[in-house]
Every structure is written in C-alpha cells, then in structure tokens.
Image 1 (cartoon, rainbow, N blue to C red):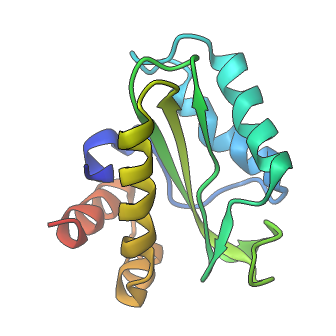
Image 2 (image 1 turned 30 degrees about the vertical axis):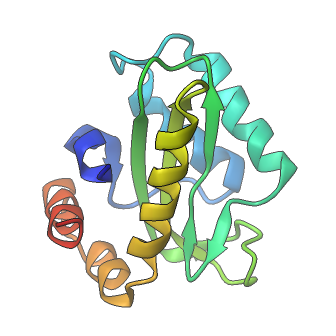
Length: 151
C-alpha cells in the first residue's frame, strides 16, 4: 500500500496557512470534503480531532500523522501539508512538525490501516525523503517525491 496512490495535487498543501494544530487538521481536511470516498465530512473531521485529543500523532522527526478509523469514509483518504517553519503539534520529541499527513481509514479495514501506518513510519525515517518533500516547489513535485521513495 503506497500513499501516493491516494494523493492528488488538490490534496497537497505546499505551505500551510494555519499555525494551530486543530486548524491545520481542518485546513488539510477541506480538500477531502468532495472526495468520492467521503460519506460524512463533519463526522470525519470530528473523528480525526477526537483521535488527536486522545494522544498526539506527532511521531517525532518533524512529522505528524493525524488520522482516524471511521465509518465516515468508504475507502482510504489522505492529504499532505508542509510547514517548513514548523507547527507545535505536541510531538513526542517536543520538536515542531513540518510534515503532516492526514488520513481517514474505513473502520473495517484494520489490516490495511496498520500496514499503511507502518509503511509511513519507515518512509519518514528516511531523512532524505522528508528533506526532499519539504523542498518540493509544488504539489506535483511532492507526489513525485512520494513515488520515488515508495518504489
């Protein structure tokens, strides 16, 4: 399972405008509103925010993966946001987050959900990947970066 398969240029924000965690999540969620797999956008957003309240999805290394297993989506949905100046996500390492991947996963797809999280964890441990993604000049280049590292 590769993340770039779920991305489009419309779902990548090269420079996030928001600076607060909840607003960043809402900004990233907005392009998913009209996604064909979206059943209930408001519930999706509420589920992601609720999951974030349980514990931070800032996994360290400048990366956060806000996500929810939810009945509000029929299939995987994802959006990516970049914030080169960093955002306080209360990450486990205390460092600002510069790369955010927002995901929605159908409740019944537990196995695929765990595989995707494991895949992302390995991907983000590659320092070159994160650096190259943060340097992407536009959404198309960001998708190409994902494709290159997800081979």
